[in-house]
Image (cartoon, rainbow, N blue to C red):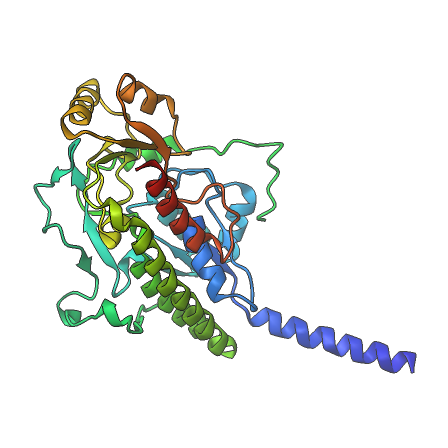
Length: 352
């Protein structure tokens, strides 16, 4: 009897191991995208996060566990080279056979031109204020309002020793290379929930192609994620309805995807880019705009030194709030993305 039980248990373990072996090994760049992938993989597996919370994705040095996760990946989901120029080189070096999915390049993704100047003057190379859909001319009939499913046709240890290495190393060479000269598209596209809706389908389709056995689960999880976004968008729209036309300043211009989706807009940013401090002339210009436009609030970010905000707005009546485009203080997982958007809305409403 005991031998029969042991044999059955061994067979079960072998079957379980076989099933688990079919689940793709998945690596993801930043926590908000990790949240989307974790939602789609719910009940099947767990992805690996590459850029840890609190670190800037624009320049990052991989730790050994993160490099190993990248090396073992069958598929890698990341925003794209404009956000993380260093990651493409890492993928080519560590995971040349993995499927690399740059979400900014996927069909249906809305892209927006960088804004320029202390008060976001239009970029000289901009294609207009409206976002650009990666469906291009062939997909001009793409209807976001109906939230249609999007086809995706691409070819082709979270446990770190923080005591031993509490601070994340930043790749300054990557910062210098990627100096955000603002030629091209703003890479902070995850802050538009309509892009997240598109990406849910992309993620589910690509995972299903690698793992057909769990395709129904991936599709169902993506649908559940999109349904949650429906409710969330309605709640945020109502929450921010009274703040259209309210002037505020952000630390750096990372929020236009969120702003345009919900009908609000920052008057300008302290830093022109993610990698460079503002010049004295820019600080003087911003201080002048604070007085001229009656700026009511300025938003710092947890990833950057808040003393710069205090310096710029010292002696003004503007209140100081905090906006976090990456959800640095949130636990990575399926719930992070909706919490991130909710926190942005709450912090905007609270300060304004």
